[in-house]
Image (cartoon, rainbow, N blue to C red; front, side):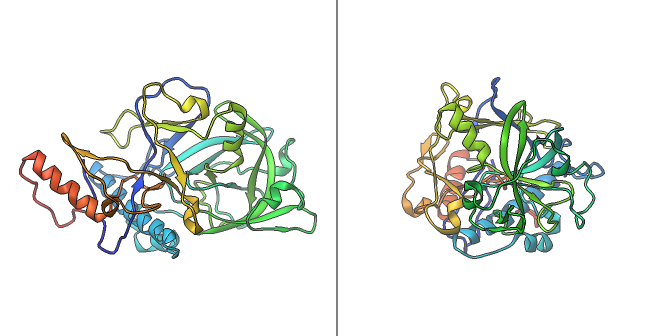
Length: 358
């Protein structure tokens, strides 16, 4: 296992991927996740000669940049991923940052859409027709005028009033301005229509319909925020379950380019017998309130369990759970302790460092 040290300026920050769950079982309520580097992903470069080594180096660079961005958010500063993309093009950035994508359909007849998954977001949005300034898309965009199940929200509706930033159009349609975790704003009209995800249908799903090209990319024209979106609220409302989810990782760990996907399970189907779960809480204040924060209770190296003091782990919201970075980061005091324990228990010669090693 490789650990990436944090720079000395980093205070208290730990990034975790999805909850670790062992092999998947058959469930009904699930979301099929596609990794951005999978051959199934529209972001996959089929002409690329990227080796596994370059793949992991790119993941590391992308993870470090996202870590710096989220650290800035937790500290109330701003560091746009748009700037990061310019600063480090080799990391494989795009405006819509994230590691996992999902597919769903909107409207009647259904239009298939690919969206980036954001576990720190609470809003679902997609590019819609008309979009005169949008880059050409590999597939059709959702056109509300061609959907027989499309409707609108008035400015006085509860859905419109629940938005943090909204305004009213001249024809009483609810308009929004939304920023995701990457601080890039997008605007459009809040509208409901039929959503279908893996044969589960939501008949009146609110989502943002945007003609804005400044946020979305031509390859991934949608963003799906999971933590507070109406889709998740509906899942748990009808299943009478607390907010529970699990992520089943794909099997082929040794081949990062394998044509495989993984599943995100919601509600009662997320409870796997005999598996340990971790409670997640929202960070309490400010910009950081978009993040889930688990409590890091223990850590072991070989046969030894580490004593995790607040000095090592950090205080409130020092552990943050996100889906837009491939790597896990430790605070430097904890990282240094882990490295020393690995050296102590491994009792093996260390490989020489190369100039470009992270």
